[in-house]
Image 1 (cartoon, rainbow over the protein chains, first blue to last red):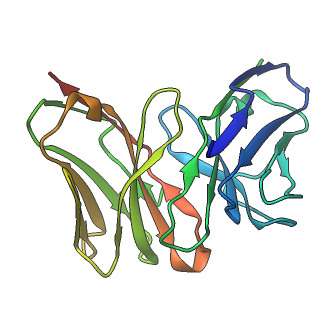
Image 2: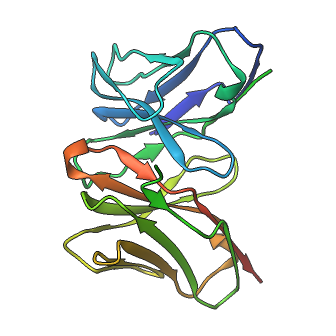
Length: 113
Length: 113
């Protein structure tokens, strides 16, 4: 099992550009999540999904969009990149019960200049 | 509104001694707590958890203590090893919010040989 994979590992964007951060898991988990981590801060939930076709906003959804067409994939879309979106982005997945562990990918470091 | 707070950004201990990492929370609806460990350039990995119906949970060198009346939990690592050097995140889950996690800011633990 590869677990949770994320691509790319690093990316530099110019203000106003768009990009999609890819996330895939091979553990057949129903739940998937996107977090961002700013320096000196904890992880903040951007969006999450409880299954294919179902997504919902987290704490900090503004400026992002998601879709979940399959169980395995949960891409995060940035439409008009802003410097405030410079962060490290983590994708995670879990079975979804309250006691279940969330498994994290290695992260994507995004810089917007 | 930071519902989960880790007031110590860093902690340095000697190999073989005890490491104590602290976490405070404000939301009385939190009923499940977790500790995650994060190495540089990797995603967080699950370490240990505790349900609000318990006040202690042990797993090898790691013990988590929960004081519900004080809204405080702590992670004890005994004995500390250099490989424990990492950022430790406290996280909490509210039953009504499903499997979503609220994270603290993290504490950088350095274990000196």
